[in-house]
Image (cartoon, rainbow, N blue to C red; front, side, top):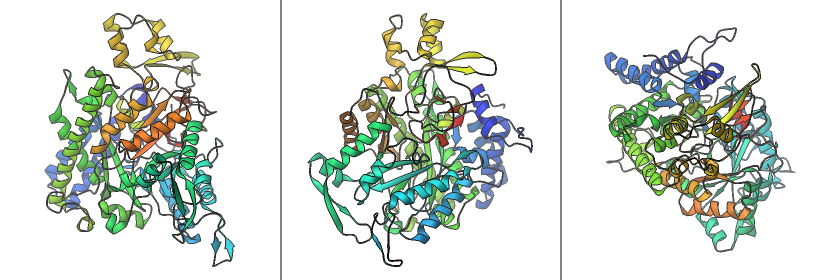
Length: 604
């Protein structure tokens, strides 16, 4: 078969994914790319003594699910599988110990990970506070923020896999004595530009906020309390920062560690990957892949049998990636293979809802999201158990808290909902579990001097079928207008095609919460807010996410950054394209998108 992809997907693939010759001319097309990846990942079956005929059939299945755009692995796998260079994983967390040797090793390891295409996360929580005594040198500690700036400078030197700049996440416990300085460290736009930051909180802190009580800051070196501080003072500062420019986010670490089944052996998870959806142990990595739900609707019904088959195949694929992978350090290889975590996720959820004629912000949509994720989780769990029976459980299984009879898994974690920025563009579907951000947008081709209007294909067909299609309507939407203001558009269409900026923060959070119980890792989801939203609105949203048992939360208030993402209007096609939504174009490479640094975004 021949892969059918959109012109936009072809542009992205040609720019970043196709193998090229010495003159930068592509050596493959999309069909060749998927065949290269399928062959490389299926070849791992030889290690498990799979019959050749079975391996060959599996290679065909791997190819078909990618070529049919039903499942796409994370970008490093697409780029590097079969090339014998570069990592196949996207997500890494590195240890950051409180010593000069530990800090320098973290910097070196981060450089090696990012050199081959990975993004890194760090926890600053073990570093002694600024001004603390250093016995070995009789000096004083520079503090975690200076260490963060050092890691940022190292990252700026690296271009990930020759394709993009380094992307990182820094997490600090809310109990660290330097927490207020950490919250403020990115208050000036552009500072530490290649790091996202999040505050790690727990139930105790959140209850102190709720009850308006004080709590103790604790020196990580001495384990002693330093001062007490009103919890609401810290929480308000977090909310003010998020209101101002979208940072910091919040990670609910105790919720995260409820699914950490190897905590007794390896300790707690205290950091995530750059986009926040993948909590990991120190030196652990994870490879992700997403199922395109929009491909599993037939005659307004979900094809559950095909979805189950694809999920099982995806688990096999991602487990093989662990063995096909190149690891930047021996410690990462050892830790990754000890737990063998994978991240099966979904994308195209908003497109699926449109096909089923279910408004995104309806209770029915949330119920369906919960049902779909439970179904995928069950199929992934069963596939992992079957693999464990054939290949053995993950090596750390005996030290885990899984039920040794009913939960004998090949993979310590199976589920992750990633932002799917680029791969959803390749699959021509909505990203992750996000709603559509826009129904129409404009791009200007500066070479040809033409302005082109791009329209959501589902909406375009609905407008034509409903008799309300017009160039004027599309231009209106492309230039920032709302469908909700158009009298000629039927009410049911307005409800079905509601966009992210038109949802309430509560509706965003409740959708994330609907998916969370079936996801043993995290979920990437932006909580969009209008420009007129207040700090209290951010406060209420963070509190709701906590009460709904989410594992993390990120908000973005429209217009809150000087170098604002441009969601409508005319933009140059040679700008950077937002990883969240193809309608967002940057003029250059120094802007932030709503979820991650520009370094995680693509060339349009």
